[in-house]
Length: 321
Image (tube, rainbow, N blue to C red; front, top):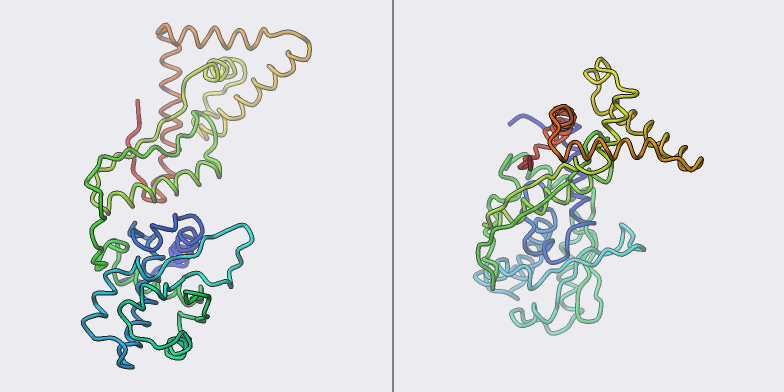
C-alpha cells in the first residue's frame, strides 16, 4: 500500500480531533464507525483491551471473559464530556469500577490501580482513581499515529472493518434524511458551510454504517427576492467574461454591489433598486423565459463550483432541482 501524503495525514489528524470534540458522547464510545471518524471507538477498544489482558495476566480475569467484555465496551469505558474549559491534558475516558467489579475479582481500588499502572506508557498516558471510576488519559500524539497506522492497513474500509459491533438495542433499520450544507446561489462556500458539511457527512456515514438507509440532500438557496436583486445587479454591473473566469467571485461582487446600492437608497428614503429587484423576482415566479434562463445559468454555475469543494472531500449528495 502506498504511504499517505502529508496532506492526507493532516486531514486524518483533523478528523481525529473533530471526533473527540464534536461527536456525541454516546457515539464516541459505542457507534463511532463512520469512515475516518471512529477514533473514539478505536481508543476505547485499544484501552480496554490493554486493561483486560493485564487483568487476565494477573489471574483476575478468565480468558473467555476478556472477549465478552470487549464486546460490551460501551458499558465499561465512556468518554468525558468536553466543556469550554476542558484542557487537552485532562483525562478523556472513564472506566466504571462497578461494571468492571461484577466480573473482575479485585479486593480494593488500590489493587486495581497497581495492576493498571502496568499499562501506562505508549498510548495510555495515565490512570488515576476517582471515586467509583478510573480516569484514563491518552496521549493524543501517539494515539493519532496509532489511528493513522490503522487507516493505512484498512484503507477505504477504515471505520467499518473488523470492529464486530454489537447490534443497536431497541432500534430497527430506518430511512434517514440528512440535509447539508445548503449554500446560497452565487455566494462563497464559507467556514459555516464547511462545518455543516463535515457534521452532515459524518452523521450520514454514521447512520449508513449502522445499517440504515441514508439519503444525503443539499438544498441550494436559489429563490426569493435575493435572486431578483442578483439578476438586477448582473444587468447593471455584470460581465460575461468575468462570469466565465470565476463565476462565484463575480456573482458575489455583483450581489454585494447591488445590495450596497439598496442600502444607499434606504438612507435617502428611496427604494427604487429594491423594488426593481422585487419585480424581477416576480417575473421569475411567473415563468418569464429570460429570467428562467438567467436563474438556471447562475444556479448551474454555482453548483459546478460547489461540487469542486465537495469532490475534494469525497462527499456525494442529491441536489434538489
